[in-house]
Image 1: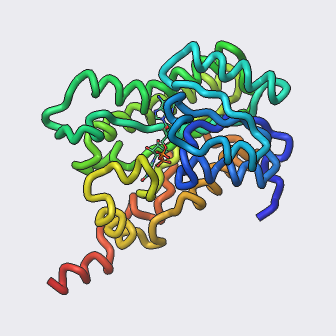
Image 2: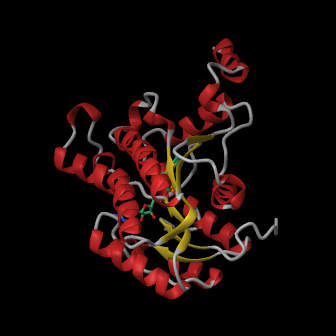
Length: 271
Ligand SMILES: NC(=O)c1ccc[n+]([C@@H]2O[C@H](COP(=O)([O-])OP(=O)(O)OC[C@H]3O[C@@H](n4cnc5c(N)ncnc54)[C@H](O)[C@@H]3O)[C@@H](O)[C@H]2O)c1
């Protein structure tokens, strides 16, 4: 698929931890489409992950940044502009983490320090990223910022826990900041609401395998893969989507608008 859709474009990709990460696939596809970009992740993820292998394959450098730290984000944008030679065209926010999910806390019995952390890492980090970019004037006109989200922001998926609240906030930050950044600099901000996908963050959700199978049967086109999510993201970074902003875009094989499917009904008939 060599279209050169991002030829001459520069950006930052957050959140590539290992080859399963959605951000990893976005980086591979952005590279294939001609983009130049820096890669970033939390300093702790540098030690656990394989991001340097990806950087080598994409001709990128890695700049560690905790996405909750304004100081780290400032350094990330400054270094990225230095490395890439000027302001940027795109940013991928592909970050999620809930200590409550990790520690098995039930939604009705949350640890509130953890809850703050979930919100800060998974949602407020998008605000901090956009605010830093705006302050440094780091994005060009018609730049495109994409955050990844999940339909638990709109509908209840009980085991998604406090991540559902974080995603609701993330999507709203996308809309609110999208307004202000659009007025100020014609920068567009959108969230992509992706099917459940097998990754480190995804597999942290209880009962993930059966849930993945359920979502697949509920989606007329089947679950969207990480590679397909990457392709959609590239389209959102490209010049073909210049007037799309402040949207939450479902990329889920039709799951979001399906009430029930024949495949799921059949399963109940069997029983
Ligand atoms: N996997 C799914 O089922 C699914 C579905 C819909 C949306 N998403 C969203 O996609 C995004 C990417 O997740 P993924 O599934 O590729 O999993 P992943 O675990 O590969 O990616 C999550 C990333 O967040 C990073 N991160 C955590 N804390 C951070 C911090 N303080 N600063 C900077 N980075 C930090 C991790 O290091 C990791 O790279 C997340 O927002 C996730 O919620 C995932």
